[in-house]
Amino acid sequence: MSWIPLAGLRAWPAAALSLLLTLGAALWTAPPSQADGDGTEARLAAAVDEILADPDLPSAIWGLVVQDARTGRVVLSRNADKNLLPASNLKLFTTAAALDALGPTFRYTTRLYHLGDVSADGTLSGDLVIRGSGDPTFGSSGQGDPLDDWAEALAEAGVRRVDGRIVGDDDVFEDARYGEGWDVTHIATEAYAPPAGGLVWGDNLVSIQIRAAAVGQRPSFESDPAGFATVTGDVTTRSGGGRLDIERTLGTDTFVLRGGVPAGYRGTLRVPVANPTLFAVHAFARALEEAGIDVARAERVDVDDTERKPSYDGAEPLRAYVSPTLDEIVERTNIESDNLYAEQLFRTLGGGTVDRAADRVEAFVSGAGADADGLSIVDGSGLSRKDLVTPASLAAVLRAMRAHPASGSFLRSLPEGGGSGSTLRNRLSGVPVRAKTGSLMAVRCLAGYVDGPDGTPYVFVLMANNYTGRGGQIAGAQDDIVRALAAGRRVPADE
Image (cartoon, rainbow, N blue to C red; front, side, top):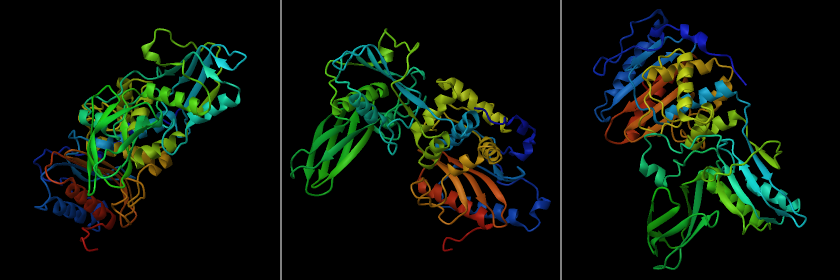
């Protein structure tokens, strides 16, 4: 499915998109315009100057763009053409390009094949294959588990045993599980940094359930799905508070826990797996067992580890799982800032390859009227510290998406101020804003749309890099700027 190309937007004047400012230059250089007859823009400029001049605000490199979303006229600008780390603001590029290329109604389909024979006693020989499509929703939290449904359907059809291989086919994507420049401490144990892959199940996270014992005793650990991860460690149950540290050697699914838990504690850790494909295969084998199907003799295989690849010529799938529509996937990606969903969309854009995905995103940015030369896009989520984009390029994408056929889907994917379950749940409540956050160490970004006091729709991009101190102060300053845009003036803290 294709959408109206954005090439026509290239005619926007460059001066209407951004103003090149040096890092030490004065904040506002745009001359007064007839559009500022009531002095609103002058008040906004003074308000932002005041906010960023706060002596208690950590020193940072700021990149700002505020535009009239209807005309593209730049209202405020600072370092608009300087490359900065976007963190999760990069998801705005990924999701916009995905909606443009695939359309809001696009769906993934993951299929189950049996490539072999069935005996009279219900024994499957040959290969039982899960053919992945890159779908991030397959077995994802809140989506139900298609593997359970498939296992139950096989049991109801009379299958009693699997003697052949259970194969996970992830060849729809290249094997590039992590973005270039991802922090090793993130990919080792953090739930927000699971590996990507052509076959995804359960968000590529294994659950470790922890139950306290008597004081002084070792708690119990249980992985879910059972038998996939190995959990060891030196942990005790304490009468007071506790703290757990978790370690893992990369490339393994052995986790070591250290520390203590309080008496009566019951909790769950979710940690990334090493091989998503084998994780899905293991989960399917467990589902088959729970449905009463014997898989004791079934070999569990990642298609990349075998020379005997499945052949689908003439084969019809036994079952298929069809994902929610792309607009629903994009909504979760941006509202929850889901890194795995973003990485799966990114690779889908590239036909399975990261390099081609980056080329397509950059082409979309160019089509939106921005200069994409010199940008560095190496992943889809913004977890990499090698991602570098300009505030002007992000503002151009936001403005282009406001007029895009998929504008409604894109807008709905951006958190509202104070929106429950979103990254803005504790920010900007009551402000007419839709915006995406982004954060890494020494990086805080906020970009989206806000309505001014006279109904003027603004596109805004607020990027802060290279600060020391508390990120919350930077985020607070960004929120103050958005409130000023909405009110047309500086809003005192007590209002």
